Image 1 (spheres, rainbow, N blue to C red):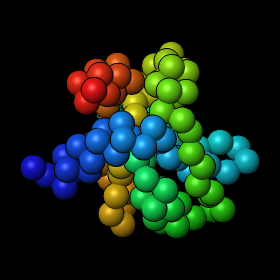
Image 2 (cartoon, rainbow, N blue to C red):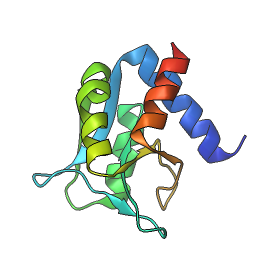
Image 3 (cartoon, rainbow, N blue to C red):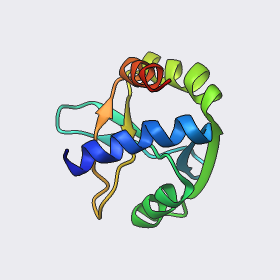
Length: 114
């Protein structure tokens, strides 16, 4: 399994166990990433430590915050789908790379993890 694949697998396992999703943000919101194909992704992490590392890499005064898994699943993912955003999962490394999924793919993977 690739590094990104193992990070994605860890994400779904961790959030099912903890019931929490982590993100980084500032007063204007959370940063998105524009990929080469022109789609934007909003990244999330499965632990506070992972999100803290990402915040340090991106800098710019980003702070770590959490969201209950139920809220993320029931409110955030539908909003991301409406906005045409993809979901970055446990991005890591010095350039914060990893897998990204559509919100529907995330919902399917969460359901499969039950």
